[in-house]
Image (cartoon, rainbow, N blue to C red; front, top):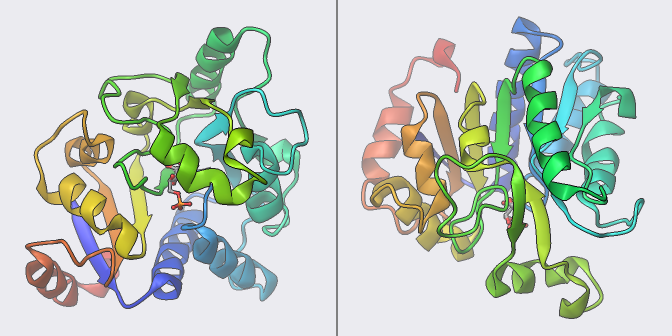
Length: 260
Ligand code: F6R
């Protein structure tokens, strides 16, 4: 696992946008898995700016969702489908035709989950999966004690995650209890995992995920199993890392041609 410590969220967004741009040169129709929440916004802004100024061609890119609330009415502005269309698909100049997501309103949620795993495989698999991390160590919405081999399925959010996400809703009561999320096993099938974490509130979860033991109690520690996982953290989110100096030295000495 590579740990890159950047000065701030904007620098992290720019670095990851460069990795996506490089991927799109190598594979113009790459399938890009996107996370929602506040953290990845600087990535999407940096990428959209490069598409707008013509330095990145994302016209053949395909976008897929990591997770979705269960039961929010179709078109709800905080459904992750709406968020991804608004914050990623449209700013990159793409349409829904380039987009894959699970149906959080399906009458048969278990079937919708299995169908989404199938759709990802039929699309050739995810080339680069962006991830955030919850304050409780979740990735996607795989809460603590999620199976490290899990597939896309329904999960129940912890109270902590519902409280963290209440800022997107008018009240805590409106935050759904249930979600459809790519499983940890599903996430680990992506060819490259890129997790961005910013801010002091993520420092403990980052330290446990990167330097702690592999454990279902810290779902993000599953990145330790992946042959190509990159964790980009700002100084605040890196503040709990014992090996921070080693990670800084390693990245400083890395040949530029290697990219992320
Ligand atoms: C959302 C997702 C979650 C978030 C995490 C952090 O699609 O996958 O794992 O990445 O809850 O959220 P923020 O970035 O809002 O702190």
